[in-house]
Image (cartoon, rainbow, N blue to C red; front, top):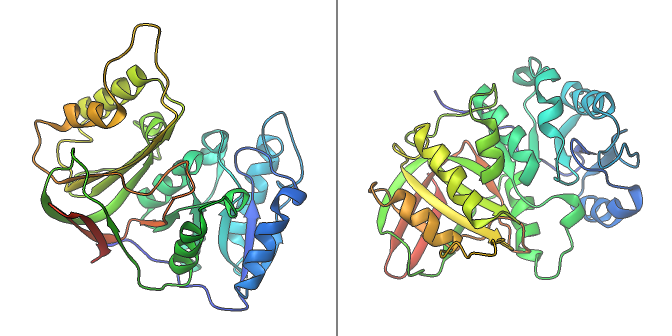
Length: 301
């Protein structure tokens, strides 16, 4: 069944910044607010911003109530998650998405926000996996920020990445699905779990032990998440950790060992994840992936 794409943003639209996971202060968000306003948007800072409960943007009920308010307000045309970290799985089952069909809106973020990306896809809505307000102005991140604006405003975009020695050639068409590997494993078997068969999966992660990357991929494979893929995009696996006895493989080698028995195309080095190069992807949107000798191209179908 086709997914629903929220309407593109237009100048004058109102957007909200919220903290469903880790905390962020108004001072930390000021530069992002100025950028969004330069795009012609009006910005609302939710009650979960500028408050703290340990690491979180307020207690669970504060974060849930704030996100729910922005979901239900028809004047809010997009919800931008300030940052990731951890916390969204604690509130996802208490959120009511029943009014979203009457007034679809963009939800954008990545990392822990993979929870929302997947939950919305399960409900049939597209969302954006992309750079978050706290990271808008990383050095070298202008193209990532531009890609978020293009996704929000409905502009045409395509990506080309250089050849990688571990790429597997081929072509595939399917809806985009994925995000943070550890979150995808965590969501398995929950109400936010999404089918991957016939879809193009994209993966990224940060600070994970090499053996844990393999363990999570084994888990996804055992639950059938890899067998029916149309294609695979491998993003940044930033700052991988190792034990005293080396694991002996890079994240990219671990991934290729796990998918060696399948035939779908694989593109490594895709600019998504916890680095300045983090291009926006529309989760749930049909896309075409072509991997060849000169690199890989991704465009929306």
